[in-house]
Structure formats: C-alpha cells, structure tokens
Length: 210
Image (cartoon, rainbow, N blue to C red; front, side, top):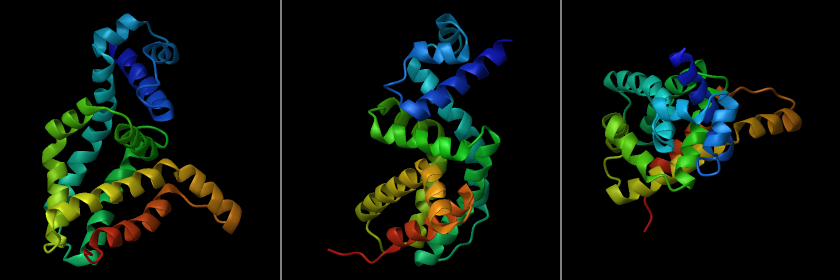
C-alpha cells in the first residue's frame, strides 16, 4: 500500500509539474490528484524539493545507465558527423522513457525545460551530484568530436543546443499536429527527434566565428 501511495504521488507530481511548472504547482493540487493527504507526501518525500528530485530520479535512473553503456562502446569520429552519430546513440535511451509513462520522453523534456526556466538551484545540484559522471562523459565525448572548439564556445553551443532540444520536444505534440495538417503525414516522436538531431549537430560543430 505504501509503495502504491508513493507511486501515485510521483505520478500526480510528474503530470502537474510538467503541465504547470514547479512553482505554480501547489502541494494541495498534488495531494488532490493523487487522492492522498499531505501527511503521506511528507512521510514519503519530506518536502516539495525532495518530491521534485524524486520525479527526476525516476527518469534519470532509467536513462543514465543506458547512456553510460552506449558511451562505453562508442567509436563515432570527429566533426559534425561525429556529433551527429553521438546524438543518435542517445535517441534509444531517450525513447525508452516512454516505458515509464505515456509520452514519458516528452514529459521528461518538459520537466527539464521547467528546470531551466524556473529558479531551481537545488535541482541542478541534485542532478550533478547524482548523475554528473554520466553528464560529464557526454560532454567529454562531444569535446572529443570537436577538439579545436574552445571550452567557452562549447558551453554556449551546448546551452543553445539544449534550448532547441527542450523547446522542440516540449512542443512535439503541436509539431506533429502541424505536420499532419500541412503535409497530411502522421509522425511519431522518433521522427521529430530524427529531424532535430542533424540540426543540433550542425549547431554544435559549426565554424567558430569571432
């Protein structure tokens, strides 16, 4: 029963956080959707910050081991093509998040976007403390593809690449509906990602300008 209650709370929080954001979502709304009392939330998570982290933990615990496994067996080359191959290697682990919940991949990216847009310093510390090794390994793999790119320039490009990824994925449902309306073609989330990866790869690997 306790495990079921904890899952219900996580499911409710995940849905509301992705829909409304962390700041705008109240504990009262979470308890109402999960059909539990506040004491149950406090018992399982202790605070709203801990609940936010637990929502992310469920995704990251699924995602990061698969990313690490792929990085350990990767031989991708240099330049834009190398970056593109690297990003494509990360697609299957991202799509696997759909096994956690309906539209799990898009929900996860929406949550990442919320974390970027709202002041959630504790979230960045949590992610880097618990999953920093894998994140740094991904960044290092990109650096290996682009050995002549200055570190500061890579920082900016990674930031803009993440912005493009988060925006596109968070609005993926709208994109799919537009494609269906304008081009009479039904697409799934995987096709959205496959269009996005070459664009992001070129943005990361483009010529350095002063």
